Length: 414
Image (tube, rainbow, N blue to C red):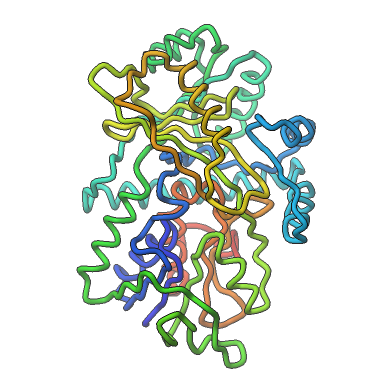
């Protein structure tokens, strides 16, 4: 089949790549000049297959007033006169139920394990240059109360086949010596050896080049999608800034833009942008920086080593619908880095970035067919796009081919 994939972030590019490898002729279309230039450009870099629990959980509710009203909170809400925002907030609150949270965690964990398998297969097969490392992940906690809560979560994840190890303060520093300067603020940690890290943008560019060199693909960058032409419950063509584009099938994988495009077909995907920030430090031979992925739970900031760079990411802004960088958020992250890693000795000031993550209230992406018989979805991954991309692309490719899937076919059914 000729399949058009809308969106060239990590999800769309991975989908187009998987479909091309399946033997389909693929057209990848995006308004940007290259793949991976928006939410995938400088994300957190962590491939946290075991840490996929949705943001919506009962434990969040008591903290929401403090988080939402404080300007320096890691989760911040800017109310807007936007019905979509209020619908999303209400749906998020309704999703903060223990049973739903555990069910969603089980489903996302299964997709995370499938993603780890698929991505590591690609790494073994093609050796893409995206600073990939299978160094594991360490979560550090600043107090015994939060560490005890983490211990209970590890028991739940262990029951789902995800082993983790509780570490003392000394064990944390032994595993990651760069934490020595913040040892006084660490009550303990959780180590997961199965986690990876990498540069999502570099992986997108690797797949873009593979698509460019293939006779079974076409790249249409700097092209905006303006709408659809349908006949009954079938998409006949895609209306673009370069004219109509007809194909046998279409995959909507446009990140936050998926919501508006789906609306034109009468579908509400429940996607709303959550803004996140990152800093990228160039390291020197004198830099004392972590070599494994580290998540500082107290500050809600994550660290990922990408070759000779350190990627630092965090913050969630609800109601900030542009990628304009908030200087206050960047300052807060720089202060966290200076406090945790005073001997970072970077080559200079970090480069700052902000991106919009396509989030659904319950944390589950939409992967699979729609009521239109030649339109599929692969979107709504929120903060887990990089982590879940390889598995999501494989799952959708299997569905389109009619093959048995490694996951239950309706887990992420639109």
